[in-house]
Length: 285
Image 1 (spheres, one colour):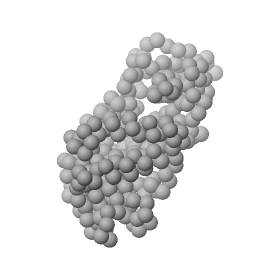
Image 2 (cartoon, rainbow, N blue to C red):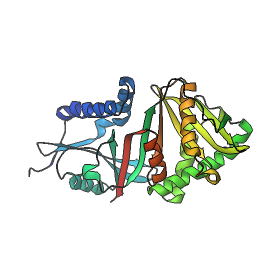
Image 3 (cartoon, helix red, strand yellow):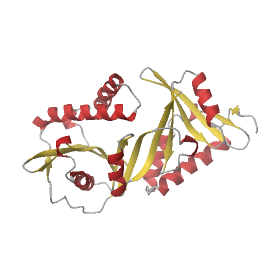
Image 4 (cartoon, rainbow, N blue to C red):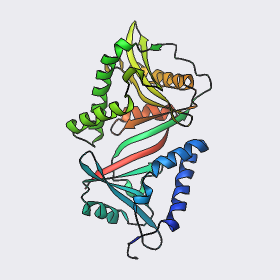
C-alpha cells in the first residue's frame, strides 16, 4: 500500500472530479444548467480544500468553523481504505464531526457506517399538474403568517434534532438563523409563496415554496400536513400541491430536503418518484 501524501496542486485531480460530479447530477435527471449550478454550489471554496493521494486515487478534505463548531468534510475519496486517513486529518485539526455529500443516489460504499442526516430530492413535474380533488388550496393570508411561522419553526427544530446532528438548543439557534436568511422580509419576501390546504372544512396543512431557487427549480421548504390530520392520505396530495405550485412559479422541477430519521417521509417520496439528488451523511469523531 502506497503512503498517502498531501499535494499542493489540484490540476491532475480537479477536472476529473468536477466531471464525475456533473455526470452524477446529469444521471439524476438534471438539465445542463441545473447540473452546472449544482456543481458550482458543491465546489464552493474548492481552492481551499486539502488534496492528498496515494499515487492511484485521491482524498479531498476540509475543516470549517460553523457557528462555534469545528466540522470536517470529505469532498472526494477514491483511495481504498482512505477514510481513516481523512477522519484522522480532520480530527487532528479539531473537528468533532465529519460529513460527506453523496451525489445522484450513489451507493454509500466506504461511508455505509455514516448515518443519513438529510437528502435533497428532486422530480420533474408535468406541464399542467392538477390540484388534488380532496383539497382546496389558497394563498396563506398575511394575518395567518405569525401562527404559521411558529408552527413551522417548531417542526423544523424537531426535524433537526431527530436527524441527530444538533442538540435542541443548537437546533433552535439554527432555526432562527435559517428563517432570517430565507425570509428576510417575512411574508413579503420576493420569490416565496405560502399556501393553506383545506379539507373537512378546516386547514389541514400548509405549503412554503421558493420559485427560481436554482435554474428551473422550485424548492419546497415545506409541504406540511398537520400532525392531527396525518394518516388520512393527505401526504401524497400535498406532493401534488407542490407540483402545481412549481408550475405556478414558472419552474419545471420540484426539489426539497428530507431529514434523516424520517423514514415515513422517505418512503412516501420514493413512491412519488422523487429521486435522491444529494445525500448528506456524517459521524462524530
